[in-house]
Amino acid sequence: MKLELPIALSNRHIHLSQGDLEVLFGEGYELTHMRDLSQPGQYACEERVDVVGPKNTIKGVRVLGPTRSNTQLEVSISDAFKLGVEPVIRNSGDIKGTPGAKIVGPKGEVEIEEGIIVAARHIHMHTKDGEKFGVKDNDIVKVKTEGPRAVLFENVLIRVDDNFALEMHVDIEEGNAAGVKNGDIVELIK
Amino acid sequence: MKLELPIALSNRHIHLSQGDLEVLFGEGYELTHMRDLSQPGQYACEERVDVVGPKNTIKGVRVLGPTRSNTQLEVSISDAFKLGVEPVIRNSGDIKGTPGAKIVGPKGEVEIEEGIIVAARHIHMHTKDGEKFGVKDNDIVKVKTEGPRAVLFENVLIRVDDNFALEMHVDIEEGNAAGVKNGDIVELIK
Image (cartoon, rainbow over all chains, first blue to last red; front, side):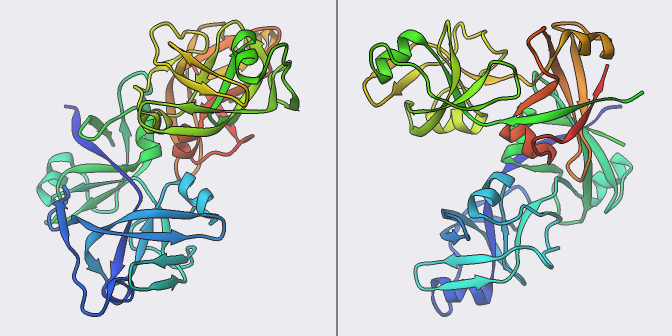
């Protein structure tokens, strides 16, 4: 049986801590919901910030909600080169020792010491999907795409949680390298 | 025995016909050699042009020499979306029916009817490399990369010629998706 699931391409985005949000947008500020994302409880916000790196600024980086305990900026390798910071492949939340930058909002700016990552490719799945696919949280699998730019992605992290929906996440460069679009079906290979 | 070869990441660039070169840079104009590329006889030029698509302009696209029989613009999928043209994966030279755009140089501009491609990943090799690797011109192989972003590229075209040097060519998005840099060693798999 083929183990199939949808893929989604993540553009650059930032998760903010409540503290940083208030420095950037004003005291007591709350994020403005724009649209739900595929993962339950996650949403894109109307808010955007500018990221000032050692080399260049990337303007209008989308904020995702809700706020988190630590501010985390997720970029592509090309974005990292443009900013002038080392591209560091990390799993979400694992930001220790990663590069920082200046984040600029309409009401203030904050210099983050760390938090810029190139997100490692991963698959979100609900606990029942984990059972169906025969994999568990933190497993590493491969994923195969079809078409003229077909690739086999190795080192794909499995994330299993009762709050996750079945979807593989790659960044724009990975998605384009494989010639896939949001919602395309890919194959998990154990 | 592992079949190993170096990989190189191609940024967006344009090959110009002599006719288009003269429209863009002036009558009788000749390209200015900046540096040799890895393929014998090919070179990056001092000249740059702007490409005006239906949606956006990409400025400062590097011209590669020597001139060719047809003008051909090679971009990434992200570049194609930025310009506002359909990203069409093609082998170099196979431009029939591909999108066009307005090319702007310092002395004039030219509207190309076709010629914008997203270059299909391929391997250049000398005839003696073809014998050593046991492959021939137009064969399709796979290529494996190493590291945290390891991928297996499928549908890799083999190009064998006495004027070619051994090297795999991918675009920036493919290279970053695989986490490879210019000169990294990859493995050909038949």
